[in-house]
Image (cartoon, rainbow, N blue to C red; front, side, top):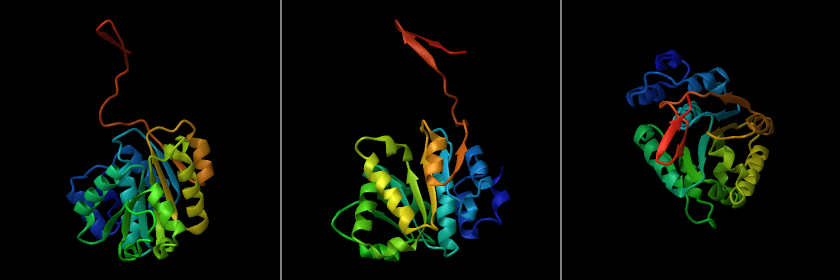
Length: 222
């Protein structure tokens, strides 16, 4: 599907930013997400391969909500380095019409200055801390994106992420929740827990070859 097919479904500034960045065709996962209610505020769990376009799915929902004055959006990632990368990418694409912030620092602060920002990128641990410090802008969130949501199964980060999602669903029952992952063993079960539609697809930009290495030779599966 060409990007101009959804031109009337998203704000003009968002369409111009996305198309201006060279996006002409929507990838299969993006088309499926839109069909599943992405732009209507539906909760979605998107489980598709790496580089299949999951980040743009989140951007379409988050920036649309901001420009349509539904509220703020938060993009949650597992690592500070990834948070910085997303912050730089989003600022480059959207800073001319929305305010993008990065929050990964002191866990003993409420970061009240974030009330002035539209799209906030942070780690799960940081957002958990902000909620516990009663950051006033939390209740202004209309879209919550959880990247690498499969880390719910991680012994270290999993409990914090599970509690965070549970708190967010209680605090923000009307907010749209988007979970993104390339690897989930039980996507149907997780989608039910999130009360979300499930979007799956096997398309990837580069073909994946499987093979066995032995004695200096690789035998690929036909």
